[in-house]
Image (tube, rainbow, N blue to C red):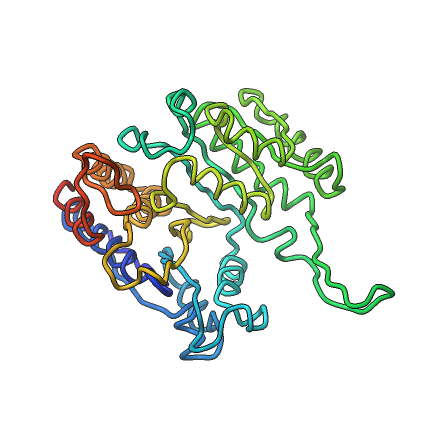
Length: 360
């Protein structure tokens, strides 16, 4: 089977971690007789420096022509200009919002799982961690406050700014269906996050989610306010299976969920729409302070590639091979600097990739 994959390596450690994922996919290709063709495209700071914009139209067009997209990370200073000095539409992160919208990727899945071998890295109390952490945040990705009307003006109190949170019934319905379908493949429980005691958009969100739930009588639905969710993730994360959220709530809560597993460098994500073409990326940033030092943990990007194999290409056994290889390396005691603990063997990022390739 031949697949064309657009690669948006991006900035900072992006090229290093995407190279690791590509090496893993090529190894899978050799083992199973698949051909993966990779096309490198510009996005982020590297795109701004060469084209003047964070996401050129050519990149969008080529991504639309691909079978799937692998993303590294974007962000960092643009030449001698700090990000804060750039207008919003020219910041590297603006490319993320634009590519998600252009590809129609309304569903972002962020698994947060505590690997048994990394239990010691979990920042929670041992008795809480021992109950297990295995949840998936299903985040609506192209609606809400990040895509709502925004602007600035001048009023009686001087200059003001505004951003608008807005959701339609259709937008909430389609993301809710993703969550309920996923729950059927897991532990049959959806926790829907909102702020319905304050926000009208959240009240609509809750109404629509409950309507969708009628079609899934085998799935338990729980409503939870976002502030309580932030507390419960720390107090009792084992209660969560599938967590359904709006764009902004999911952005925040998924990072919290990532950190309670021990390392943000371990967690993958996928963004999907109405087609099999998805965008797969680690949830961490570009970490420019360690770029080029061979310190970056490639596992999150490698696991993102495994998600691509499973969700976009229906290569179930291949994805399991990658995930099992990662588990074997961790169980053998190898660690990159971000997950290093006493008594383990520290390795560089490239060495971690090599160890995973050997086990595949």
